[in-house]
Length: 453
Image (cartoon, rainbow, N blue to C red; front, side, top):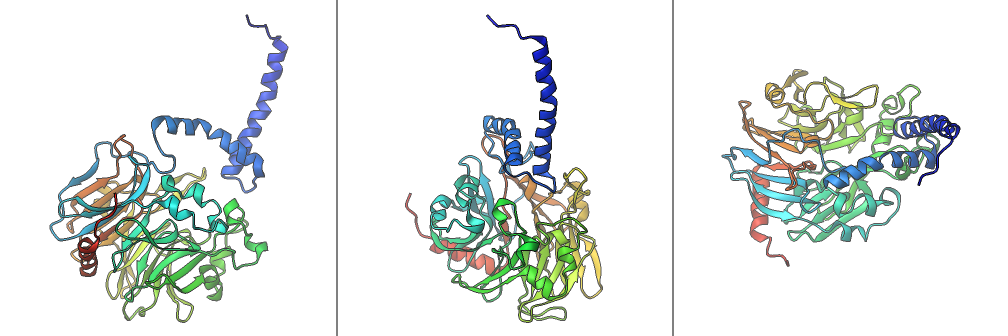
């Protein structure tokens, strides 16, 4: 039935296969971690190498890139004791049962879902210009691949969120506003006047092409972060390149001081926290900036284009900076390290650090509780210390949300597990606990109306 193969032919195939295998592995490695790429050859090699993984993910029902490691197999949804004080959660999560990103408004006094937003991202994308950062938006940010990041319930009943463009939807998940002027990302915060501050990408870049390249969509250029301020109606009031701000403030060494290695994402702005009151250490209108790849918290004054304070402390690859009072801020410290083999690891556990401007001292907040509960997200993550001393944390990499009492005891957790048992990503959820947030929430629930099925 089968024809015999000469032994010398078999040896020749094996002999030729060795250099081909080595060459294939080299192309894959260069595409992943090498400083030199080989265009379509290395991209094709990487694609072919990932086929077995993709087949496994499809067979298991997992949506690649949106499922996460299951570190807590015994946890599903909310576990623990509801809050005694009125508070709500805007839970941004990937719903693995419908394979779409949603936001749920949850009453934390009973864990009941009061409202759900599930917008048609595919429909919204049709009106986005397919250029620059949005060249592949229909492929990379469609209904099945989009989280509604850092949702915020705003006065008037709209829900704003990041999904590349900055978007606002109504209670029926219909689009009321969309800004695709820039690629927006990470945090969404509002100041005392109702203006929105959000990180953005500046494209084309403002620096010379010979230094930063141009086409960020094809892995060919530097990411240039920008700071954007929008009015309540969506008009851009302020937009400036953070790269240029650093140059203007004679901080070029933090952009280009990496020896002979090119840094494609030198700043990585992940949080803008507006200052709403004058104080001894800042002024109303200032903004705190969290720069992950600099392991830096900076205080920037847009009115004068000055970085008036620039802190490198006992934290690295941090996310999320919050103002606690007139002399203290808190920082969610990821403590993420990149090892020689390009793997990301957390050095021990995440931390919530408080910096005191009066004393210049640092302190850890409820650190024993974070150690005991093994909180260690590599990327993302956020924290908020409530006025009563309670602590809210999102452990983004593992889709776990935690709430600690002020004495450090764990009150409740939430793990985003789907009906198929797989855990899926969460997208910077937000706890609503201030008088202003509670008023906006109640007004929304009262006026949201009914939606067409």
